[in-house]
Length: 99
Image (tube, rainbow, N blue to C red; front, side):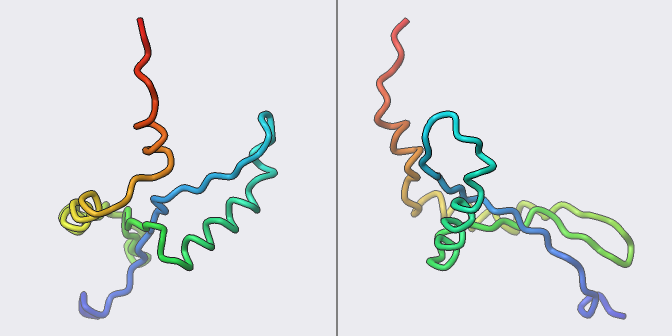
């Protein structure tokens, strides 16, 4: 079989996070369903980012890291056009700590 016909697995990592509001002390495991619902909603609106972290070849059993050049241009473009996350906006609003 030629390389162009060889099928491998591409493993993707979700690079987006979701926030769930809950009272202090809530067991995070009880919030998973709400977090998944928010993640699915964001996915439907194209608001999550997936990054291919590695590939797996079932014929050889080997994992390979994805070359950085696959994402270099995409990452730079995203940095230049993306909106700040809620967490980043909150960080910007913080007052510096006094010594």
